[in-house]
Length: 228
Ligand SMILES: NC(=O)c1ccc[n+]([C@@H]2O[C@H](COP(=O)([O-])OP(=O)(O)OC[C@H]3O[C@@H](n4cnc5c(N)ncnc54)[C@H](OP(=O)(O)O)[C@@H]3O)[C@@H](O)[C@H]2O)c1
Image (tube, rainbow, N blue to C red; front, side, top):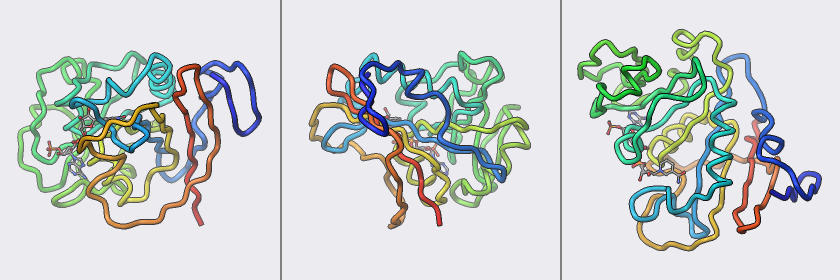
């Protein structure tokens, strides 16, 4: 890929472009969101994100996963795309659900890597799968993230992988510290969700920490949350 910002560089690898998370925090794990969207803002085409992606985009996702201690993903995405156990030893994957409509017999959970993030008042049977509970009616991510180190003590970096409903809840809690957004060079129309849905109105400002492009015109932006 070719880096356009901050310093132009003609030929950099994905590992160089994504050498580390853009920061760390002491009060709770750092949260990076990783998504791909079309030029016209859709995060799905024909029902999932695969058609928007590319080999380089997949490499970016893998690289960001490798930097994370915990991956957090919405139950809708797990139901639509399927999630297996992580490749990185010791990494945990938290599936966010209110309903409990998640197949707990899949390898993600039988491997011990998967856990649930749910509400204080959810009543479904977790079948012995570990769970973090936070919030009533909907998961409150400010609380859930503060409790995460109770389950994964050394957790420094969380990678959130969507989809839009989960992202909306993260936005509401203002816990997204960086957004790694691939813009797929396609306009897809349709009624697919944009990056976040269901959130209240916010004006959370970000600054562009890095912008890169590949030979197929996929754009790779790293956005850093500006606080204070
Ligand atoms: N373009 C991309 O990079 C990308 C990335 C990921 C996914 N996707 C696509 O996005 C689509 C899925 O997105 P989506 O927005 O429909 O689903 P989602 O965000 O993956 O999952 C939504 C579900 O997660 C649970 N959930 C989310 N926030 C919650 C909260 N605050 N409290 C309690 N539960 C919560 C609920 O599960 P329950 O229903 O179980 O209660 C909710 O129905 C799929 O088509 C997928 O392919 C695209």
